[in-house]
Length: 404
Ligand code: AN7
Image (cartoon, rainbow, N blue to C red; front, side, top):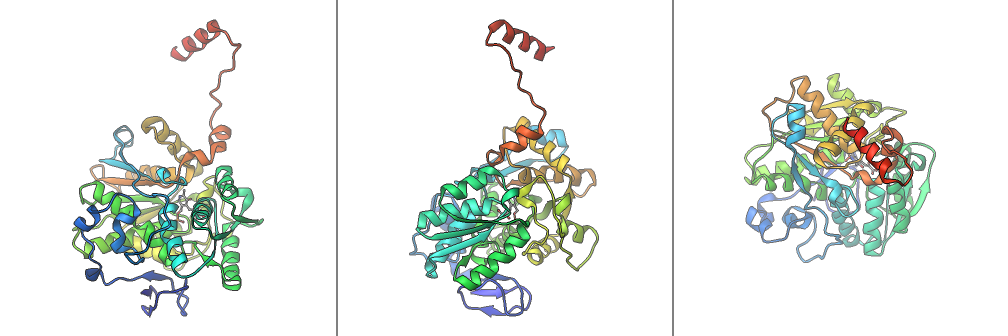
């Protein structure tokens, strides 16, 4: 069953992305009837489908899967001590099969697509969504159309869509234009839309929060800090944790902090200025291309998550994102893409302004691997490579220099 978050109307399951009133849809369960429990989860291996009582797929359906989820929750003591934060963990979503958290949504979204009889799926993307959808479409033998702001996509992500055989349309405008076009294309040409406007896809993404609390022994952190682009993930994680609390599996909820890049921060602006009206950013710009989004479709869900959780949103500069990326790589051995480093930049600012206390337990979500966007490092970091003649004496000199 689907339910409109704006007018509360219930709508039967089917190929549907928004309500007649224009509101966003979410999946509704009779939670008590699902049979979800810690024991039921524990009877299945780790990963997205461990939590299948709380996913919109019948028990006898074999999912379209690449064994997604079950990503590491890494305690980061060195980084915490440098930032002056309490206990800190990274939920490192780059460990997913296609290198980002999107796989959680796509295993569910593409499985539902197949159940609904779709044979052609599509999305607009800043990169990771298209990489993930291309892979899951390939695995299930469906056609896949992706519309991309092709000049602003990390090459690793583009290479994934090409490798998996997606039909790729590159446009001049940004993600927001691509999003408008794919919605029209899906309606007109009978393509199943798998952006995070799709309520079923978001159900897969909520398992990220389930894994966090399960890994902490069903304890809930004080804060979950994550990047916000199209605003699906923050909404999904919040929805899932509310369901766990309603079921009595956890006894409290975290506060949600959404981090945006300063040049693409309409939700942070709304929250920080205390406004209720949403104003898109018309020409979003940031080196964190994954979150270069000015008109996030899920803003009402994200604002709800932030308000209900007594959370916050904030904007961070590109420079602080780069420095956070470098810190995480050098102090914790985690190489994440710029968008995924934004929560660490955000955490630093939230500690500084006192929103997050120095004794609070914080989970940052690092949403995607750094390997897809090597040019950021190669072009933007100072070049550390010492070029020498192939000679052992030269190596000795270099090492002596490095030590001095
Ligand atoms: C690494 O791929 O929107 O707020 O089209 O790739 O749920 O949109 C990517 C988003 C964070 C933001 N981190 O998540 C796309 C796309 C990474 C991302 C986000 C994205 P949402």
